[in-house]
Length: 358
Image (cartoon, rainbow, N blue to C red; front, side):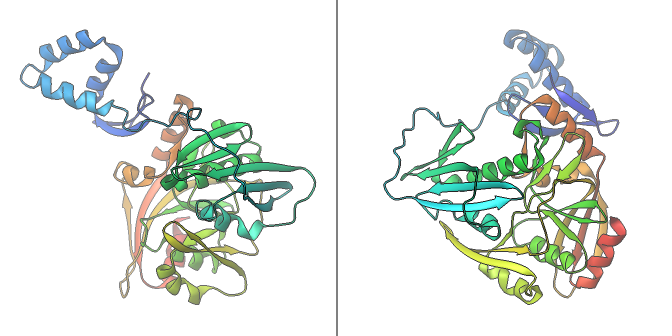
């Protein structure tokens, strides 16, 4: 079964579960994909020769390439780990839930420690244990009776999996019951949310801090959890910024922000979180997505963009649960969102524009 929704008379947004891909396709390409999915290999070859006699072989190669799974997952049970001799503990609290992370390598887990440092506390009462053990090549995450092994250089998987687990705990929504976790920062005003996205260095974090200093609330940073009915869940993880970017941001910060630094495999990173932001079991309606960029000495520019044109950028590093129900929920939500592109240089212009959009 292919999950699909029409964008216009000529195109559809589809989800292919087999390879976990979202694509914008023409009507003709949709028919080809459906034929490939529904027919045997031999029948599909016949279908191509009958309908596309001149380039049947070329089309077959492209379709096979589309349905090729690029990355093989590591067999969790083949990689063996021994409990390290030297271990450290990091205790923290999210609302009334207490956790303790046991780890042996601070660099591998540096991002997690930075994202959660402002939540650190003494160990109390019932505490859920999370284990992160690293070897020369691999990292093991033991979480809630599950076991995940990944390569050391894939530390972003570790951060994402832990934060998504904590978010699920906070909202009492099972991990697989979310539509997905979206790569973007969600800011709200009067309980209406917008997702801010942008490439590294685009000014996404500095823009978020400008908005926080002007009455907006931080719902979550970098990984926005989306429910199946199109709402974003709050989670109090910190905003991360590289030292080069921190020089620009530092002038916007005062005593109302937590600031810490950790050192990972790629060097130091700063983490920032507003002190007045508290964990809330709250889901925020969100139908606006903004691709943002800071351009020095420029006038503000605001433009509407088509959802399909933003899709590839938006899904970069996003995670949608690999089932048709979640995919359908995401597609319905995404195609009903309004998408904008904003470039600016003056903070007041940005604040006014976002208030107008939201």
